[in-house]
Image 1 (spheres, rainbow, N blue to C red):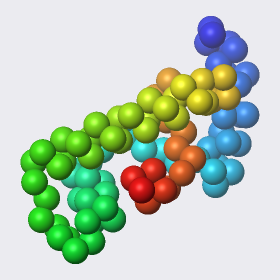
Image 2: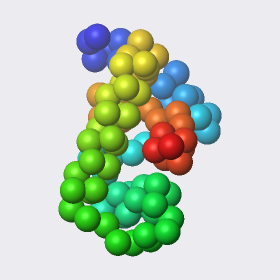
Image 3: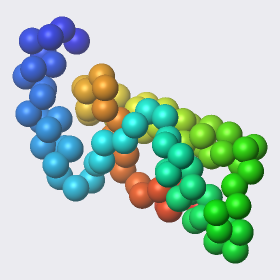
Length: 93
């Protein structure tokens, strides 16, 4: 898709982003995101996060991003943004 086509698609993409069904997220999870995912998955252990657990959470997050990009490839044309449809609780269950 060339620049002109991307600009024409921009308003449609922007409408999707502000619809409430999408959020902008970083390509790599922050430490706070990893901690939040850990607490949801292991509420009893709380903040006791092992390095291996963080690595697995990071892999899970990257797999979810890749799946969202594949699913929305024909719908969203932003190169720098990733549509996320489900909440982290629904994705990590």
